[in-house]
Image (cartoon, rainbow, N blue to C red):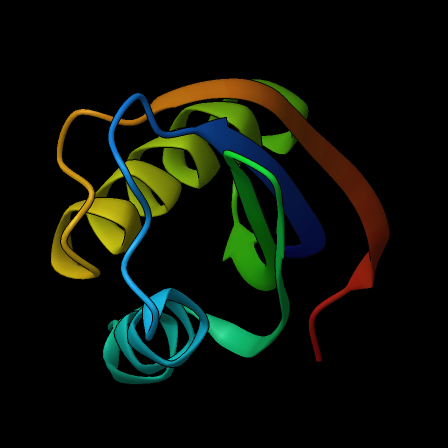
Length: 96
């Protein structure tokens, strides 16, 4: 197993709710398979956050699973129509 740090940015076409940071962080905190959620931020119409995941098949799996989890977190935070505009998967080490 390998650990990857996933960071993402998404653009929301509608108005962002005042509690978007709390909702996004809460969604990541409660999501199975997500470790070390954090870094939720808003800048204009762009939201982002970061989390860690463990995968068995390297970068391709980390990117696939990371994007799925990011979209699910956005949906759970009340932004189902937001579009991912940046997704990064950084290998941070082997799982113990």
